[in-house]
Image (cartoon, rainbow, N blue to C red; front, top):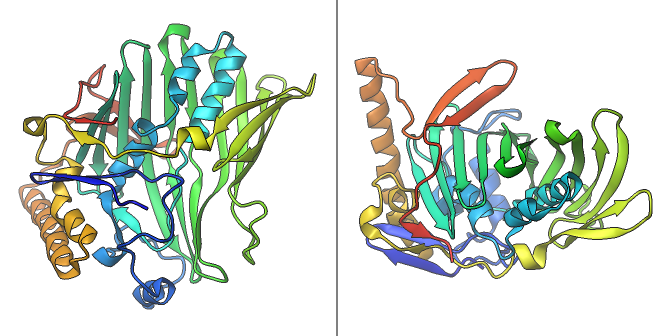
Amino acid sequence: MVTEYNIEPNAVLTSPLSLESGSDLEYKAPNLVQRLLSLFKNVRPGSNLTQFQLPPLFNLPKSQLQCFGESLYCVGDDMLSKCIDGKSPLERFAAVVGWSISTTRPAIFGVAPFNPILGETHHVSRGNLNVMLEQVSHHPPVTALHATDETKNVETIWCHNIIPKFYGTSIEAVVYGKRKLKLSSYDENYVMNAPKLLIRFFPVPSADWVGNVTIRCKEIDLEAELCYKGPSLLGFRGNNRSIKGKIIESSTSKTIFEISGHWDRTVLIKDVMDGKTTIIHDAKKSITKLNAPLLKDPKGLCSNESAVVWGEVSQAILRKEWEKARGAKNVVEEKERVLRRERECKGETWIPNHFTLSYSKEEGWDCTPKLTLVPPAPIVAP
């Protein structure tokens, strides 16, 4: 349950999504399926939901920026450090696969985070890892993430464009864009994508990560192919949250390791030559007993920080003050609409503060950080 939270002046920080998060959230609406379907009664199947606004009754008390960031800075086991500790390219690659899987966090049926407003940021530090996120586009929604650890020569850059579509009995949210991880000490660059989120209303309500993920590192001629699976259509959960895949040599397509397991339990790699198996991801160590971030420096908070932008709305949701939450959310969204109209009247184009945004038909959206290193943040993850 997401019951732990820290409320500072104008800022609310809640505990991250973890294996303890479940369908029994205290603030979640009753009769969820009926209520949700009533929201979509006038939405045609196949419609893009990027501009669809949920009432606070169906919101988590946090922004999508915070959810993305939590998957990186809220960890029980430091999987990112294991990527650097590998003694060989193959060991490091296997560790990167494990780290990528560890960023998968449970989605909860019936509730979703706030859609970030344009220019919203989320800045958090965990030890020497400093993380900055920014909503660099609103229509379409594009989120950028930059994280650096100068002591370990690690850098990761994410650029996500989520497109949710309604299909009558389900919603499919595809996460377009790339995640890049650079291990500067080894001159290794890893590029990967993310699974998509499938929300089913019938026959059994569920929210699961599904689809194919590819991880590549050209410098060491290796790649991984992963397949995320949810429960069967009839709700049988034998393969729920399962992962299967392999690590291959890119130039020859030769399989080196086979991958199997469940991202919410353990994932193993098996050496095809000698049959030896190794655990590369243990969910009990990496995504359980996670604590809410803490506000270390209130004076360092920006007005566009997620915890501030949505602070009043989040506090009202946690207290089940639904009318207050609705009013506070309307204030945030109307302010955004006013600023957009003002820019349009002046013929101005909004420019991100922390990233340079680009687009091509071949590659889609891409983001380049303006700073080499992310500075320490006023919010810290324990």
